[in-house]
Image (cartoon, rainbow, N blue to C red):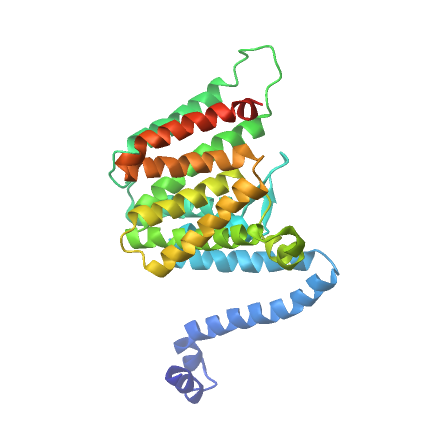
Length: 321
């Protein structure tokens, strides 16, 4: 506030004053341009006048996101899961799928990390860990498989090259995010990536547990979740992360354990009552939870193995069908 007052009081209409205050004037000009541009664009977007304002508005938000990520690179990792779940944005690839906000943030995080090593540090280095070498070998295997897959091994139609590249990129981007996380995030920041996902996932699960006759009350909230982000793997992640926190996080406060317990109960209700026929959805989550119970409680290992064998035997026809 004091600097702003001093800036106004020192105003002189001469070249020297403009030279001294050039950085401030540039910031004011940029902010004013963005402000009035948004005022111009938003009404036209809402009224559907034409599509150019949509692109302009998307460019403004994209530029803002790039500036923020350049200043705080770790934010791209913290926002990766929430963006993938609720941000309705994607870039088409021409293969029937699109790169959603989560994938774009992952690519931005990987690209900025590599760029920093090349331009700033001028050396390529990664966090020393026993997991790095197998991860790099996995990436090499993926690239080798992509190349060898172009040979005519069988007299059958191959998937398009764009689809094959997309499949390979799933592995490569996942490996890149693994390396960026190991090199960018501290243990505390890594724990922060967990809570937005549990919060969004818990909200979705609690809403799903509400009886169907009240669904009109929660539909408007559920529709904010992007299609495909609440599939079977979502239930596996949520259940296993919550149980892992309850079992292994000794510093977790009791109130947070209670909240996670409620979320876990809602997930169990949805899985075993509302969607009991969706075996591919709840069985992997159940086995993940059982494995952590198996690790935590030695006396329960034999009963867990027996229950798992009985469950597989009872549901075998449904599993194979």
